[in-house]
Each structure stands twice: as C-alpha cells, then as structure tokens.
Image 1 (cartoon, rainbow, N blue to C red):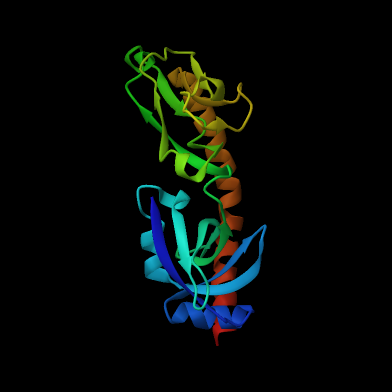
Image 2 (tube, rainbow, N blue to C red):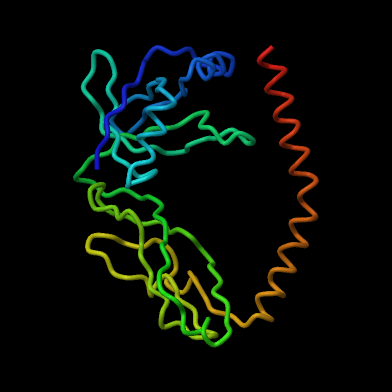
Amino acid sequence: MEVTLRAETGREPGSRSSRRLRRTGMVPAIIYGRDVAPIAVAVDAHDLYVALHTGAGANALINLETEGADAQLTMAREVQRHPVRGEITHVDFVKISLTEKTQVEVTIEIIGESVGVKEGGIVETIRNSIHVEALPTGIPQSIIVDISELAVGDTLRIGDLPAIDGVEYLGDDDDPVVTVVTPAAAEAEAAEAEEGVEEGVEGEGAEAEDSEEAEASADE
C-alpha cells in the first residue's frame, strides 16, 4: 500500500530550528538514498502519524512530494521519539525501488492455543518481530505463527516460521521465537528479570528527568 506525504524543503539544520518546527506541528526529517544527495525536509506530524498507521505500519511505502521535484518513493527508517511523551521527533526516509529487495522488520503474530498450556505450561514469547528481505510490494504485514501444536518443552524457531514466497528471514534458523515452559521455569526467569529491572529503574528515571530538564532549558 502506498501513501502520499507532503514534505517541505529548505529547513534550517540544528536542534534549535528543529524545536521550533515541532512547536508548529512539523517533524524534521531527511531523505536519502544511493542515487540522491541527502535532503533536509519537514513533514506534518499528523500526516506522518496517519502514514505510519496504515495496515503496513512502519513499513508503509511513502510517496514524498517536494516542491519543484518528482515524488520519491520512500520508507521510514530511524524513527526517533521523545523519551517521555513518545511523539515522533525526527525521521529518516530512505529512497527505494520497487524492483530491488529491501530489509525491514516485521511483527510476528502468534495465534492458536498451545496444547502445552492445556497441560499446565506457559507460553513464553522470545521475540515479537523479525528482520526479513523482500521486494517492497512483497513485505508481509505480519508473520502469522500458529502455536497450537506446541507442547511443554517445545520451542518454535526462526527455521520453523512459515515460508512466504519472495520473503527471506534474516537470522539464525536455530534462534528461538516462542517456547512453552513449565510454571516453575517461567517464575524463575521472571524473578531474574524483575531483579534486573529494579537495579536499573532508578538510573533510567533519572536519565528521563534530566532529558526533560535539558529540553526545557534549551527551549527557553
């Protein structure tokens, strides 16, 4: 699916001008590609949100229209967000060709109820997405994985993902995607993860607070 997005050229570089743009509802961005020099642009924040929330999500094909130039077919890359508010603060658009394969990240969608759950096991998702290589028009919206046959102790790996014509999974075939474990094993892993979070939460909170204060000071 292709969407069209208007991009304004001529924006000034630098963090101060970028902050001014954001206050007017615009997002600073850059267009680049193998056969085009990098171009600094700005796009409407609302229009960008709409473009990235179609069925294709972050892998939407975006026709960028700039004044005095032909529209350029791109995909959004390196989408940066505010650490606290989550809004997009900058985005890179890479120019693509419909006849050349590209590498993107695609969501893994798990369906079905594992027989292992009926046996008292717990489904543990190791990864929620995977990098693939495909033509822009052949990129799947998601990779659907049916775990109905997974019993306790079973693991579904990258090599077990469903074959999709024209799509190549990038990664080791032995890397796990989802597994079914006993409750005891899941509780042990959760305890370890919680311990790690508690150790890092104080530092992360301080970093976010410092970021907010620094941005407020710069805006003044």
